[in-house]
Image (cartoon, rainbow, N blue to C red; front, side, top):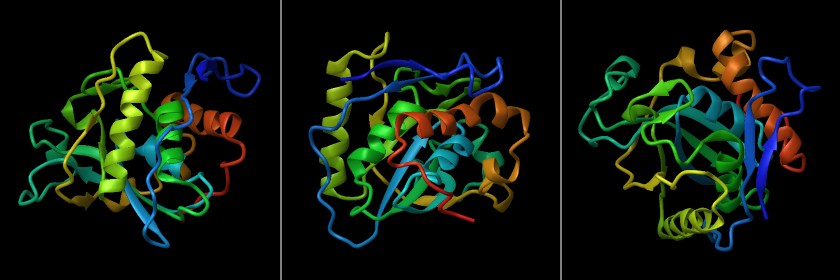
Length: 218
């Protein structure tokens, strides 16, 4: 299953109607949970949109913007990561109830409405290694599911380009600045949010109504 789905012009202003999403396939392999609450790390370009979407997913208890992928011993902040040479990527740490939403479903939502897995070191207008797409499994089950899903996406050929998203070794997560947390909710009229991130939340609501809910994090 799957295919290109364009946001309905009736739902969004004309400038946003060109935004599109791809309905990714249901994962054939999912992660078996071992805890009441699980955690997952996703890098998908600017973390405002990633956090904004996951905060609206039922079962997600908390979504925190930050950085992952660089050396564990390096302390970074937003400005340092923005230089593009730290190895860190803007990322979001998602705490979720696996009885409500599985890791595989989070993967499906991520690639359906958040990130284009074919753009190397950039998403939309943001360029640099800090804006790459990456999955950071926190256990063997997540690693198995993540690798299998990337292979499944490659076989599905829903995108014109090759899948470049990588499964990367998790070296730790550093939280982003406070003013970047819940940025979409706190700045709904921000031009960047309106142009690039509001359509992602609208896509989540239309493509996954059974998982769309109120924000998880205040």
